[in-house]
Image: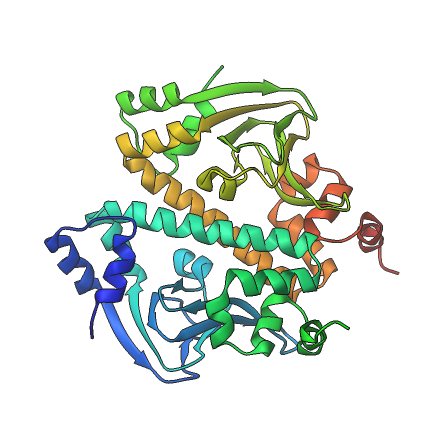
Length: 191
Length: 191
C-alpha cells in the first residue's frame, strides 16, 4: 500500500526526517474496504483514528427511535473518528461506515500516544487538525442556530462540493437535520 | 494582577520552567472588565484569545434580522474567542461580551504564534484545548440533530451546572436554539 497520501497530508503542517517518517509509518495500518463496511460500531471501544486515502466515509448516530443523524463525512484527505470516545476511552456513540470502496490508514490510540511522546512535533500537526475540526463544528453550530434549512443547504454545496458528488441527498439531509422530503423541495427550481 | 489562575490552567497539561513561565506571562495582558463590556465586536479584527480568570463571558452571533444566537459561554477557567477568525485573520463574525464583572487574560495572535514557535510544548497545551473544544462542539451538533429541546436542556443542566448559575434563561434558550417562551414551558413542573 502506498503511503504517499497520508505523508503529503502530514507535510502540509510539519516536516519529518526520514527516521521520523519510518517511525510514523510503523505506527499506522492500511485497510482496503468495500462499500458499506463498518469501520466503527456504536457501543464498541473506539480504538482508531482513520485517515481516508481514497473513497468516502460517514459517521452517524442512531437514536433510540432508529433515526440516523450524520455527524460528519470524510472524503479523500480527511481524518475521522468518534473523537470524544477515542480520546476518553469511552464506548463509541457513533457508527462509521464506508460510502464506497475506500482505502484508509489507521492509528490506534496507543500508537497515537506513543507518536506524540516520541515525536513531539506531531503535537503541532494534531493541534492544527483539532483546531480546524473545532472551527468547522463551531461554524456549523452557528449556522444551525441562525440560518434557514435552505441557507444551510446552499452553504453545504459551496463548502463541500467534492462531498456532494460522493454522498446521497438523504445523507446530506441527515447532516443538515432535515427530512429528505424537505431537502427535495429545497432543490426544486423556484418558479 | 495575579496570574495564578491561568498558570494553574496551563499546568493541567504541561510543565513550564521558570524562564518559560516568565516568557508566557510577558506575552499576556490582564484586563478588568465591568458587566456588559464588549470584548470583541463583529466585523472587527479578532486579535485576542481570552482566558477567563473570574466572571463570565458569552459569544453570540446576530443574524440579519437581529436575532441573537449564543455560540458559547465561558466562565472561570475557560478560554474563548471567535476561533475561526482569530486563526484565519478574518473579521469577527461574533460578538463577545461580559455577563458580569470579569477578569480576563488575553494573548494576541502575534504573541500566540511567537509562543508556539519559541516554546513548542505549548503545541501540546493548545492541541488538548482544541480537541476538548472540538469534541464539545461535536457532541453539541449530535445532540442538536438527535435530541428534543427538553433533552438538550436537561443535558445542559447536567453538563454545565456552574454556567447555569451565571447566565439568564434567555441566554440558555439562545444557546439551545429555542425561544425563551418555549424554555419556560420546559421548566414548568409536569403534572
